[in-house]
Length: 265
Ligand code: SIN
Ligand code: MN
Image (tube, rainbow, N blue to C red; front, side, top):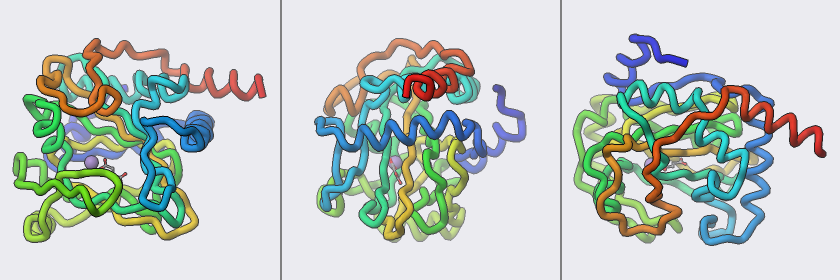
């Protein structure tokens, strides 16, 4: 799977690129079921909203086989290698729930600001990937992106530890207003299996989910191997220290896993 020159240009200019339904329903259905099972577990990697609803499950690729396969999937790894021009390692892996009725807000932020401040990542040469497990609708808290905001570098941010259960370096309203005036705001919606790539400096956030429709998205961050983090302050399962390059699995590995699970049920 190779990105076209038009797709590469879109990513460079806008800071994001959507690949609709990159994964088939049979592949996504198994991940969706495994995510629900993970959220029922009690382990330190699973963070909850203030309401108790699941917010995110960190490092699921290390304790769940299906998410492990996704983390090395060539349909995701190859395009990012193409953009970065080198091999990648897994810097962070989250399965965000945005639970029905209780999914809380993600305030406006840039990710690279956190990676640099908290983990000593030298350059914004890590790619954010979102793989939609549920249909992401305009109404169930889609990721909101400010196109072209990645061109502004790292913006001043404040450390908000109060708004949600998740501490985040967030941008002030005046900055968001200025950037949205230039670039507008795009809601990243799509069917399950859709993949979105977005730049580490792209400003993004999402509203709460008051609908009865959950919005599970796998977010993973693939860092260029030479850009490994120099000064991590966070837990190993938040900012991984295994800098070995990812060797992609076979293209049908997730499908084969889904079929094995079905046969065993
Ligand atoms: C994130 O920015 O890391 C997550 C945002 C979301 O799940 O909506
Ligand atoms: Mn983010």
